[in-house]
Image (cartoon, rainbow, N blue to C red; front, side):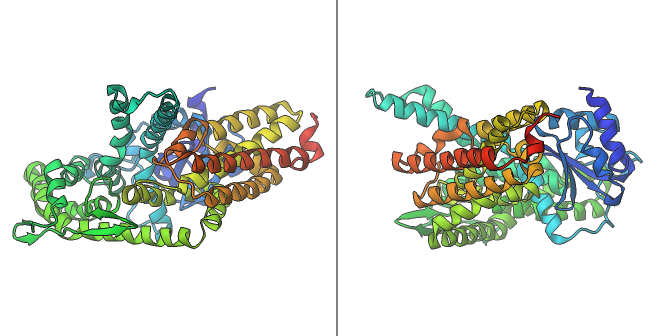
Length: 485
C-alpha cells in the first residue's frame, strides 16, 4: 500500500490543499474542515485504496480509513509539508502563516452545534487511547483478583497490583491536566500554562485545602468555594481531581484572555508577561468562579443523566445500545463521552459504555454473520477483519462502513439486537469501574461490582452478538451478496 499516493489522491478529491481549513484524526477517520464541501468528489474518494467510506457530519468531511488512519494521516501531513501542530490548526506565530497553512478562517461560518461537536471531538479524542489502556489494565486486574481469590490469595496487597492499579487510575485522577492540554490545542492557546492550571487544581495541597470544608479559604481576599453534597448514602466533597467541566471552562476563558494580552503587551515582553499574567489572573478566577460553576454544571449533567436512568435503566440501556452506532455513523458519539467521564468523576462508575458495548458486539456479530454467509472473497475478508475489530477492541467503524451499513439489513439487525442487549444490561443495572471501550479485552471491567451484574453484562453482549449474527446469516444478505460473480 502506497500511503504517499493515497494521501495525494485524498487531497485531490477533497478539493485540494487550498480547500482545507483544518485536519485532525481519531481512531478511524480523517476529519477535514473544508472551505467548500461541494468540491469533494465523494464517489472517487470512496474508491481510493484504504478508504472505507466518506461521511459529512458535524461540519466535517470525515474520511473513514479504519486501522490505517494514523499512517494515512501522517502521509497527508507529509504531502502537505506541514508539522502536526499546523495540520491541527495551530501555526506557531501569526506572521509565520503561509499559503500552505490551513488554519481555521475567522470568517468561516458554522452552526453552533457543529462548532460544539467539533471542539468536543478535538478535546476528548486524543485521550481515548489512554482511557482505553486504563480500562484494559483494570479489566485484567479484576479478572486476576477474582481468579486468585478463589485460591485464597489476595493480590491487592502486592506491589505489582498497586503499581498497575495506580497506572489505571492516573488518567482519571489527573484528568484536568490531560484535558487542559487537549482543550488548549482545540482553542489555540498556551498548552503548558493550561496544564499548569489543571495541575494546580489537583495539587495535593490544593486538594487538601478543598477537602477541609470547616475552614474558609481565600485567594487575594476572594473566597474559594467549598462544599459537599449527598449521592445516595455517600457524601461527596467538592474536589477537582477527576473533574471534567471546570478545566474546560478555565481554558476557554484563558484562550480569550491570551488573545487580549497579546494585543496590549509588546511582543518583546510577551514571553514572560503573557504566561505570568495568565496564571495570576486565571488561578483565582478558576478557584473562585469558573471551578465552582464547572462542578455544579457537572453535577447538573449527572443529575439529569441519573434521572433518565432512574426512570428506566431498561429503556436507557435499549436506547444507548440501539442508537450508539447510529451516532457513530455521524461521528456524534464523541459528544457523549463527557457524560461517561463525568459519571466516573462524580459516582466512581459508569454505565454509558456498558450499554454501548451491546452496540459494539452487535455490529461485530452482524459482520461475522456476513463473513459466514457470503462466498465473495473480498466481502468475506472485509467482514472478518471488521468483526474482529468490533468484538475484540470495540472499534466499529470498519464493520459499519465496510459491510453492515452498505448491505442495510445487517445494520438494522445490529441496531435491534444492540437495543435488546442494552435493555438486558439495564435490567441488571450493569456498570463498570473504568471508562473502557467495550470489547473482549475489557470484559472484566464490568465484573468489579459483583458477579450478578457481570452475568447480566455477559447476557447482554451475547444476545447482541449472536442475535445479530444469526439474523444476518439467515436474512441479512441478498443473493447477489452471497454468490461470487
